[in-house]
Length: 541
Image (cartoon, rainbow, N blue to C red; front, side, top):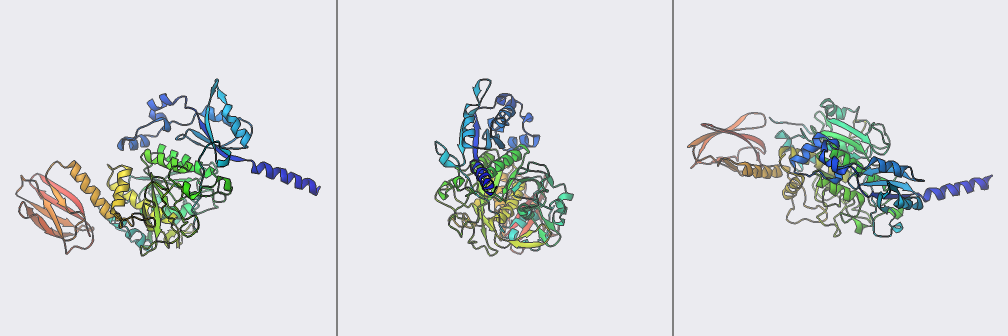
């Protein structure tokens, strides 16, 4: 009997080991022409509005995978369909090598529906294919008392954006992570829930709509707190008034290629819902099955399935923010996928003093663009744990949402900009923009500077008079150039509490105002003359 049991166990182990992961790429989408002609049938109105605002075309990739093809493949012997991607027109399947290869002969109405197959185990492919990676789970004016979270937002002057009433209102963020237990009950998210800030969610791992049900990992809860958490006078996230979708794509108990496919599914869902920004504190480098693992050289921005998916999300107008990874201290060392992708804004980590955190993954010559892009506080970052305790944790998993929230607020202030323009503004504002390196990338951003630069661009592009206010940010002297038809204009400057701090007049010959006595912060400048009344926000550095 004991021998029989051992034999059965051996057979079961052999069957288990023989199960392979693969992407099955389909030949076409039979109804794509009619779907593109009637886009509301495949995308929400919010998604259509966002694409129109940023001149993003609706194309073949927006059309869902054909349901009849999915049904046919599910019916094949030994095949489990675990995920799908409309962007790639692909299915993630699990089965034996023989059963998966047999799909190449599958036809519908006499036409072969499979164009190619890529196994996650590269040795099973007849050509170079995609492989996969690993997760970084680590252990008017608005005035907030940030409490413990003050340093991590003040480091990049995100609090200046809040003072200017840019707190994420009107922006939508999708958080792709490993678990969101207690977000529906915690005091730390009470303000978010009361404001209707959670738009919805989905658990792609367990395939259910209760994104809070999975209690096995709290990583997503911690990450969300850095953007949306609020405890009066103790903690404020960097985008507390944005709307959020919560998507569980990571199974922290295992590391398989399926998680990449689930991530792409969630990104596609985010796109269809009109999401502006994705925060993903996830990364993939190696897997439980070493045959599926990547090499550092393959972190080239376009090898991993997830990186290619992230690039498509970027093409669709979404700004994807991703943690760089926590491999700086180990043999892997380099930024992982999807943070290696050109279209992803990857965030490294520094400590509270702004010094490189040794665990933060480093850029590589294999990557076509500078990685990481920028850094934020990721060492001893404050988060709200799922029992409402404020604590510190280490990892780029936290520098990413801290920075993502700031970027959300910046984009709120500059709605006419596209994702590329916002990312470039942030890079150009950073502390070592002219001398980037593989540790800090372009450095620590200054979002007040990025906002001022963006506002000056908008003012210049939309200017219909000769009224100009510069420089912004200002240090000692503000220049106001009024239209030539006015002899003079009255100028009043108000602080964040509405108190008038300067009142004077300007003219063609007297254009300057001394701002040296003003404290650092955001101010309103009101300029009035006959038939002229203009209010501008300025930042005093």
